[in-house]
Image (cartoon, rainbow, N blue to C red; front, side, top):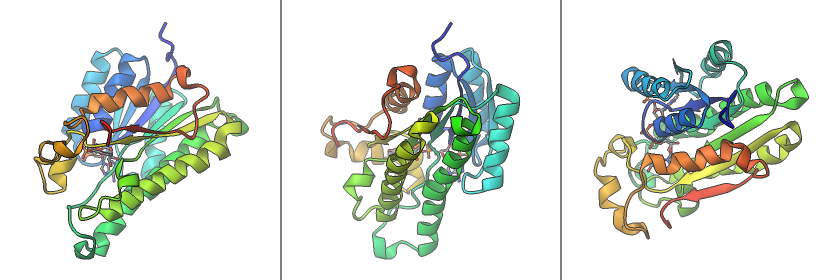
Length: 252
Ligand code: NAP
């Protein structure tokens, strides 16, 4: 039997990109997976089908992570259909269009903070309520997907996004300490430049290629290269790892 049998993991933003690769990797490692997505229903259904093909139970639920009631509905559905939730991958995230700070509309900054920070907090809060041994849960693990931007600052591109990811890492540090005695480990993964649709959404579809030269390894990473790190942090092999911020960025 898989070492991860009985693990039920919620992956937000699991329809595409890094989240989809994480969902698939976790399925192969024996987790049942609940995928959250915002709009891309077809992509979510495709990822869910691939997860099921890998032998794991899976459901895909539409959710805006910045909406507490919608997050509750995602966790309720996961628990009802897959069993008690044992893990969360806080992966849903947006950047908004690339641009200089002074030319970035405040409404765009607000949305990025709302999804990347408030959304991650809402999901972590619900996961902690489910998993805390102090509240009768069985413990578990949370992996927050932040970004190398959290320490690089991303001048001229999206300083507000970099700030949101630094907030995610601060949340990892604080929650890891607050929840350690309640059986919950909390860690961050900081991807660097990864080839996904997020660059097209920023208005620069070729960005993963055009920026490859700034990466010491000379190339963008693939979503699957992030998924392995996330799966390890969720696994029993990482049983003494909490509060870690793991850079997976080709040397960036
Ligand atoms: P992506 O390909 O653009 O996918 C984003 C995912 O997040 C999609 O599943 C999307 O759902 C979902 N999402 C967006 N807003 C949401 C909301 N309000 N509620 C629920 N789901 C929402 O992005 P990615 O590149 O895989 O990025 C995943 C994570 O890695 C993000 O947190 C990102 O900041 C981080 N990251 C990415 C890179 C990179 O270079 N790609 C680097 C560092 C960090 P729909 O499919 O329904 O739209």
